[in-house]
Image (cartoon, rainbow, N blue to C red; front, side, top):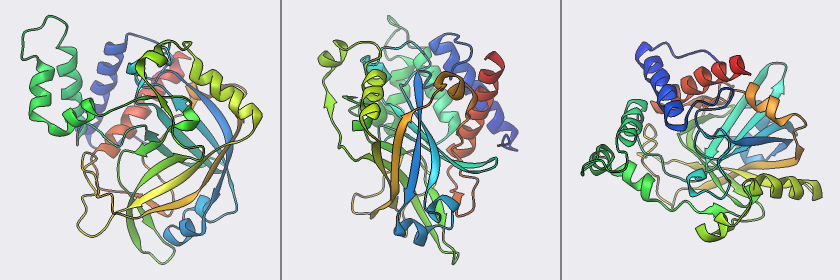
Length: 314
């Protein structure tokens, strides 16, 4: 997982990591965003549809071992699970393909993302940081949101607290490209859908819960039996925008099942593993290619830069 070759992208990524850490406070050994989390292990079993869309190994073998990480938003590792700022939640899946080969799926629990580029996201974070209580109106954040409709849509979108990480759905941020064995390219975005269905609570009920209730609930749930999700893909059609994460595709677009993610137990040394693992938004595997979305390189660089810092601190 190398850094991007574009020096500007690397510089923006470094500034994003620093800005996120400044917002949450210094917490060495933790991620600057989605700091609080835990890991499980399990398997992925592909569908026949997945094999027809992509030559990727995990879509063409009977099953693949996986690790999964659930997380809360913000860079605060002690944020209570019932805090509304802990939304949107995150889910990342590592498909272990043998040896040192792997590929990842990363999603969060909203179909929205606030900006098209990393530089715009940095500008948003800086505007929020400069809009402390008592700041004159319009504040920097108000000015930014007023001129960036996608950021306003992200901020104002409903983000309810789930009753369980197993009752939440997760959305891939950027488009990617399937490449079939015949060379056919299909643009898509991931979705991760809970087999148990979605279920949410209001803010008052969430605040009455213990600080770690989502972790505790899933620990109990998986001890009683596997927790399953369907890995899905929304397929783009001709003319759909595939290089802008803020643009949604019509609901009429096909959504196909790629397979079943089955989580079978809590990872034995979750704290150690999640400090070490660096998820990668870029697939880097045969059969799945990055799109032209500029967020991919920035997100990958942010994950790598912060991941190296996390490993060094640990």
